Length: 103
Image 1 (cartoon, one colour):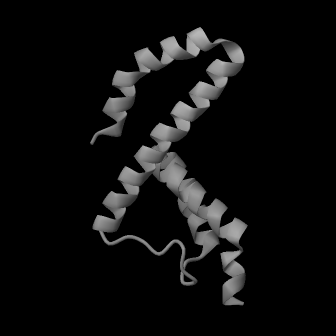
Image 2 (cartoon, rainbow, N blue to C red; image 1 turned 135 degrees about the vertical axis):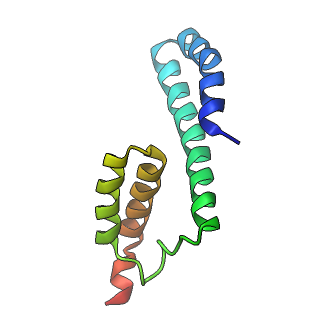
């Protein structure tokens, strides 16, 4: 599935719903749409990366500082799916204190 195409095709209908809901409801709906489609895009990109032999962000062998460096590099590359995934990996590792497991 090309999630970018799905987003582009669904946007006209979503903006109509957002407009009808008013500020609060529209903002909440827009946030839900964002999370739904961002999640699909992230899953799609992660599946491609796994297929290509990438993985291990969750393991003790992964370095959070390396992920942060990769995040900076991927911002410049411009694939925001990689940016979202790397940011999520960093967020999760820091919240779970995964780095402390290696100490």
